Image 1 (cartoon, helix red, strand yellow):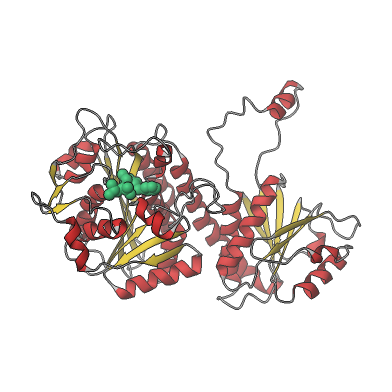
Image 2: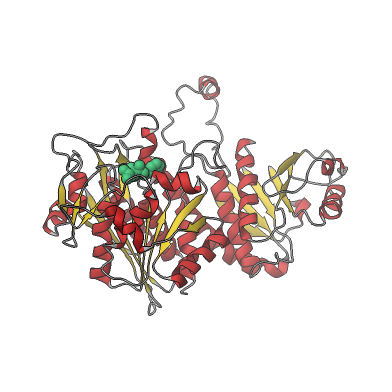
Length: 508
Ligand code: BES
Ligand code: MN
Ligand code: ZN
């Protein structure tokens, strides 16, 4: 998608689609003026209420306007950038369905009440547009597509490329520079999020541990940060017993990827981000029921979000050092697989009774968390993981579970969540939950019985941060891959990329 900012008079712009955003406040007055200028009656306003993401497509007749279509899109109360993100996303998604290849989005002055003006507004709109226009089609050959066959048979030119080809923001002249800066940031963060979505959507046979590492290496080469991949031999000699145990039943070797973005100027803080990279979770010997098991290709969404966040931090040249750590493997049953009842020794030396091989994420994260603390002594450690089905039961598909041993860190994450619309809800780390993960034969047990499954998983992870005082765990099982109908998103959402970037900016 190409992007541009323009100050050309709106109706002089040539485009397949002209998007006009409206808030619910003052809607009738503002929108009827715009419609009148376009030679249209205000009748559509009997139906259009400008709720967030509501769209209405109109086809102008008169010559007053050069674009072939007009779209009204609602920003609701336009309370914050999240509303703009959602509006832009809905508009862009509709634009793709309409096969509009050139889209102009009108950004009015003055900027909305909530924020710092045009720069942040332009960023939110570009991120939203990228998000809404995203489709995962790389595994479709098109061979069964009748329309395409017809064009091919007639020897016609290749059909026009799908999706939005150019996105133009139209802004008041005084805001041109700010809009350009915001647009560039929006492209950096928005495309990092789409990269994460691609990784999540790729099925297990297309994405093994080695492929996750390759994605990180490629990103590092492209955007100038260093990436080191530890392979099976090194993982074994480091005695990363959690990662080794989970990988035991697999024919594909594990990897442990270390991304290191260090800013040119002195870093204001060092943040370690840890992401669960289970490329497919069958449950192992504690095998899952077959229904819905295919969704477990998304069990590396934490890894994808971490790679996306490091990439975006590098592209934005944020003044913080960001270490991304991704332990990756699939979780498979075979003759070598770990068994329920096994006791393993993790990288930390802490022994774990594996009561259930389907609680594998915490085993590989245990090693990575200890590694983060011991190797980098970061100011902050944050892990993202599709850790528990119980988190979906508790909070659904649009909200992640948040845990932290530091109230200030938790508050920063909550505020970043409100700003980006990637919602989190904090749950407790009370000591009383430790009772549930006691083991008779090892230091700790990897499952905690029926109650509070999301919390006991977090309590397990807490044992492996080696006393670090500023740690947060975000359980993204729900929002990273929402069930059909539970959210507007289809498949992988890239949840966490925007949240983490917003958080990293707080140290800037
Ligand atoms: N990857 C799953 C959690 C999950 C479930 C994510 C559904 C997204 C959707 C995790 O490895 C798992 O299997 N957790 C178990 C833990 C249990 C065995 C203690 C669970 O949630 O059932
Ligand atoms: Mn599992
Ligand atoms: Zn899992």
